[in-house]
Length: 216
Image (tube, rainbow, N blue to C red; front, side, top):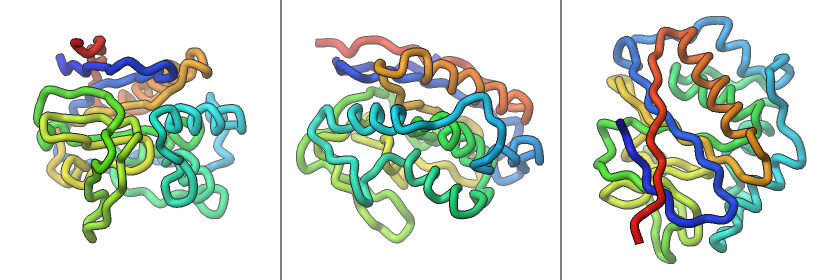
């Protein structure tokens, strides 16, 4: 079982699970039923709101990060994009994450487990930390931002995930992290449950990650 060590955080309600795909990601196609959730107006079991947006921003501000402009939560970017036009399908792993994030209002990270090096932890990145987040080599300043970290440093967060652990055509195992807040009781767990139902309908098996307090 995958384990994630959680550093002390007053606001974080993190949910995480592992997905095992039935074939390499590049060979899988999302079904029309799942793709329909990429529409902002879809009658989803959850709906975003100003309350959710504020809670997520407060979560990211807790370490000193400023979640505004180009550094706003990924869930806000998705919502704004989906209100202008339907989200374009990318691949099964990303599409399901986008659908759940769009309607729950919670940022979601998805990494390729084979590209990450254990152990894993969730902690606020120190000043000066950064990583490349896209194929063109652009970087994000991570100082003060709550991140998922592996043995090589931060690899995902609620704004932009690292390029080095992103999914690709050969991906077969992923880790999903839902960045929830205690001020939204039960919301992250509900998002995770719906997310796993959507994956099960696509033939994807899932298993909860084990969360524990970081030593020291």
